[in-house]
Image (cartoon, rainbow, N blue to C red; front, top):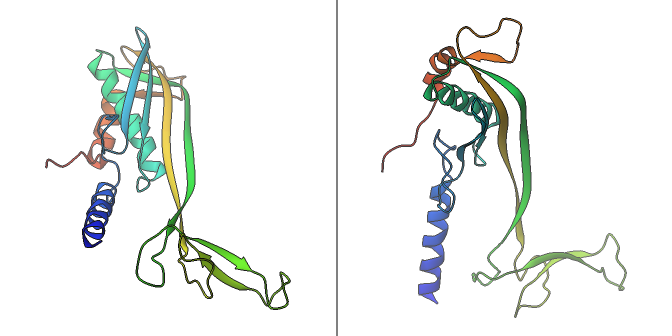
Length: 195
């Protein structure tokens, strides 16, 4: 039993350690513990789809700034001077998670909170909050455990960009000079730490 708690504590510590900072500016690495990053896909010679997804600690402004920074880098890497955002959106994904409490005997186990009938058998204001978990049965005042609810929000920004050479068009309000974007946003970019 002691071994189970040590393994559970170590697993929880690793999971929390992976999400203690906002997503740095990095490529998305699918199939790893790294959460978030940028991706791109070439559609035509001078047209790309770019995205940046953040973890629950990365705010919307950062996700959108990292998307623009990646678009500017991609523009220069392909020998172009400016890019125009043809289409752009930011998705918000909010989920609610329920984590079980430890039960009243100090042991972890899946459990559920419920409102039980009051005295006299009716569902009234005189009812009680109890818990139920395997092997514990319903209890008074939360015996058998309870749930801790938390809301997690993640943002993902997506854009389709068109790349161009020479001076950016003055009549296109969605056009950006890549060098200017890199110069202005560069100091705000947080890259992954080595280790």
